[in-house]
Image (cartoon, rainbow, N blue to C red; front, top):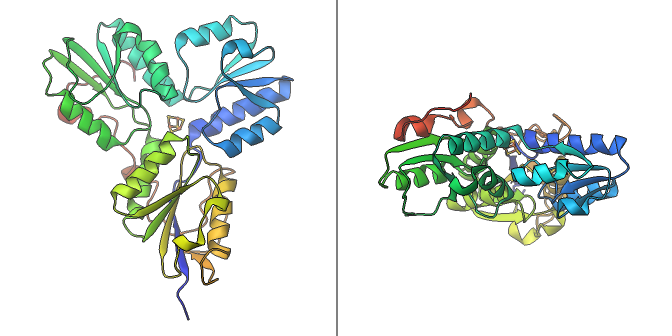
Length: 333
Ligand code: F3S
């Protein structure tokens, strides 16, 4: 009898705390406002954006486009001047900035006030980095390899979702510069870090990886990069329709993970497709422990082997880098 496709699901998987919170705030606002707008896509997932649109929650590109009702600031946050503009626009502003991003904004703002140049390690065009640049004002820079540092006092923060390794590499490079003081804040979010750690652990024990999430979701692409860097054939899909039976053979062990903006119903659909229909021979796939069950509305465990755990060891110590490499003090706890 041919061996079945084995499917191992990462844990944690899907929506993070900040995304769930932003969606809940937007939906709650919809109960009391006839119009609810989000400044940009609330999250980077087309399925969720379409569902929100059906519920009357629509995205706008600028504050001026939100004509009445409530305007939701997404979890990535926005520049302070945009928040100010929104608050002066005569509409209710619901700030759904993730509290972890809010913390980075405060650190950046405090560093700027204390006379530091602020280096942000992250993707220049990501909305979170753009918001942090707004808080840093003229003191802010996005990290580039081998950048020349002219400032004497430098503060460094990370975009919340970058891999720890990328932050460490940037710090090692920055430490080569000529400066008087370098203060480092490991602002990587534990939720993103735990998903990256889970993706890596699973990738190491499977034949190929399926990563589920919007193509415009940076954190989903990062999970796919991590799996590829582990040497595994990796496919990123937005939904089950994008799965190709030709990718799988029955004996394959397939790892599945999803970005922090991927809803549980999309994960469910992909798993159902993997289990039921997609091996070229028609052999059904099987979960390592095939008794799917719902853990929370947006994060399901599927009762599968927990190869990559949610445990504290999978998370990131916030001070690990700073203790090792540089003088670091938290401006705020
Ligand atoms: Fe917030 Fe971390 Fe999610 S910063 S939006 S909980 S990935």
